[in-house]
Length: 357
Image (cartoon, rainbow, N blue to C red; front, side, top):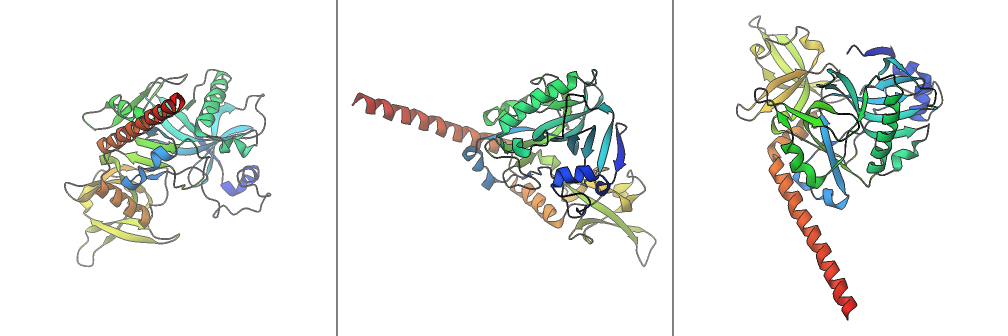
């Protein structure tokens, strides 16, 4: 990405360390510090019941790169491996004091034909973390107001935008509004609800509770749902020679601990005729094809350096086997919405009869 430039290793940016961790300078281990971003988990049938208990909403899951945005004297992006990048041509306006932290994704906008940063949560405002304890709608409303002022002061350089949180009853309408590429089956979402329009490629939706404060790493209250053909696993490709011939045998590897990988699947070399030559050093995303019962190459993940864990592989296979479809989710939401409405009508009738007595 030409807009990013590697600045320092994480352990060398002492001021950012102290802000993100709360620890004094030089006393933090970059290997122990985890990515503070919220990582949703795959949804299952048993988790649908949480939607009406905690007032859930949803927003589009963009097919982009996950980053934490940190604004201080400069604009920084922090990736999943805690590597810090500085944005070119972005200077902090004079009215901004302290640190500001957002959670979002860097994705390609088809309208402006450039990369934009889509925000879907607010963590820090002027060195104060208490904003992360607000409810989700308040955090998003404040993010919209803040980003609108920020874009006006960046000399017409549009880069930041905010995702819109939608209600659960809008889920079916949302999927009907998607634009689908009939050749590649890719879905495109066109947003016109916020102050600046954008159009990006999406691969699913994320369900988030409005009543719960922001949680780091892997909370159990945020869920993601992907289209049936986009439940993917990031695996490493390893190849070796056989003893009897000089042909290559390819293996897909998953991570089992910090330093070791496990061979999961054995595949044929001809399946990777169009992939780059540095097979041993790259992470690739694979889709499981139910019809042929095999993993199919989807794309290369240049933003990742390690494969998914074996636990993630099992969770993805469980999600594929459970096959929670869009019709099932929307049907469940309709039934529970009717139950809620009937309960409110019943309570109001009982209250009116009580007053008449």
